Image (cartoon, rainbow, N blue to C red; front, side, top):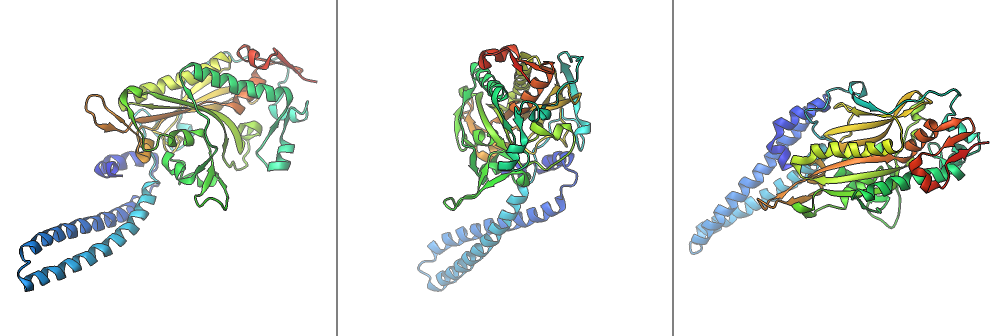
Length: 424
């Protein structure tokens, strides 16, 4: 917060780019009251310190000493009164402050929504098919390999059950991704799926996305508990209040977890079936890096995530998100979108973001500089590498040989122990 207040004009200019509707008039009303009580307390404390020094010299002069003692009691009373008011306004100001999004990088396109996103490039050959491809949702009726009805019966809408060969393929995809990351020096971390609510404030999912979260009720816990919307929450919070050595950077974590986000019902192919669920699986990668290297590492991280799609031989494109499309905590985001031949469109399978020091300041994560010995806030990067369900959909669509056969991508054959999935 102190860093923000010291550079308030810069931040306001940048935040207006992201959110023109942000009510800065209310913000400043709260801010001025916050500063008023803060200054009052400091002035009163200074007066008290001066009077305490004077009291020492007037110990033997009873009338003067009593006079000073009276004013010290009066000042103490006013300090207590101002502190109560300050705490109240500080809590309001802090809640308001938590609603401020991260500032966009200068390279980010300015725009209110995804129509301002910029397609940077495409990779891969888009195949043509001589037969009608099977929509992944229709596999519920064909072979019962995916079942949404059973899932709805036990959990409600926006859940799925995947069976037999498709379940094996789904597992193979996640195992391939995890092996790939571990081989590339990411530390594999198994994390809790349930976290304290404060963890989501730390990473920026709260307060904005409260309506998308699944809360857990338990009489045994006083803290509000939440099912993770992404393992980014658990991984980044693991570093809270830690001080790393500069030579330890970059720090690289990977985790494969289910993610829980409440999705309202919406129409269109890209919002159906496995594309948009309340529970889905995702491999998440995190990097903690030095500030002057973070944009370079964002490029590397994104290329690295893309390499998975190249190994799977799935056509994709990279998209630079506009200021209005980025997540709350991001300063710059690339989306990687895989080709869906059924819908003849691209589907997001990864978002790779640089949060700068937005999260590290909230979590008090620092590293010690070798040269200056100063403690510096690092920059934190995150990326999906990749969303497993959507990658699964892309494979069963792109790898249909005919109406009865789905070829297994070569890199997955060692995991699933077969080259084709045959359909009845």
